[in-house]
Length: 345
Ligand code: HEM
Image: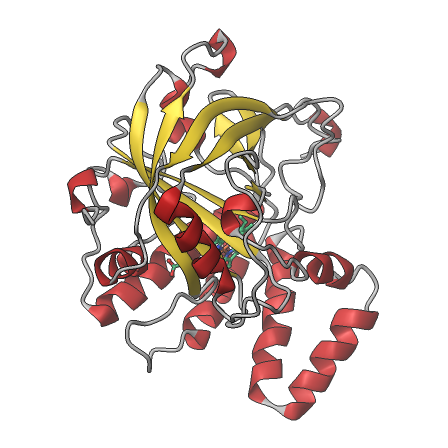
């Protein structure tokens, strides 16, 4: 398809992508460490806390936004899992995740295997863009990572190709993995990749209300993100504005390239919901175990918010297979949970 002829919200699937996704999945499965219990996620293995929350859809949304979960004003119980991308020591730079699961959301689902589910996930990270633009380049990157893990020569090749190759993702990756937040509750997160909103396309953004969450006392603990969250929530609530940004121009705001920021001057983020995190004690065995048994997946969604673009098409096969594998090994349930499964602590 001629890229100039594409419309708002349209995807362009490049030839060979399905095969690349199968290869990418095979690499992901082969790198999953199945020796530890519970089996850690292949990405974002370290949880900085799974907390209870409430997602309140605003009651004065304009008609254009009243779609899917935003159709009517409502309050959904939610769980948020905060995570590190790779780092086991929170003092190291890293990318961080905020995975949100709403409960009690009914409607047609994007995944056939999710037919009876009533959850809606939003998977966000603390950088506005993803570091790689499409599945082909992601597969190239994953193969280098795979070789780097297998031999010293692989490591050398990885460093040379990553840093010195033309159109290297390194500058973007380096920026993304250099984040050193003092608390997940004070961090801004983005979906990076686009999603449908009815006929149109949007990106998501969660912006913390800093007036509710002052900076924590300085700490050098390797678990300082979990500690800061637990200490704040023991006495006080926190809150995020949940926002969406419309795609306005199919070329300038591409669907198929999440390395591109959609210009906020042309299309500012607008608030559609408040994500309230009440005062609570969450760092206990039952809640930690619940967070680990969950599967957050951008494809756990109403069809009105179906994920868009190649990176999200790859995530469809990969998240499902990877989370099934780890949960089967752990003996965790595979069905999506309901609100009454959230531990009451
Ligand atoms: C092709 C690209 C990607 C691949 C292959 C990939 C792979 C994965 C895998 C295998 C998991 C663990 C799933 C599980 O076991 O439940 C995961 C988790 C996660 N990914 Fe991705 N991912 C990709 C892109 C992205 C993007 C664009 C974002 C940006 C928001 C992202 C953010 C996250 C987060 C926050 C988690 C942790 C979710 C949780 O707390 O359970 N990923 N990813």
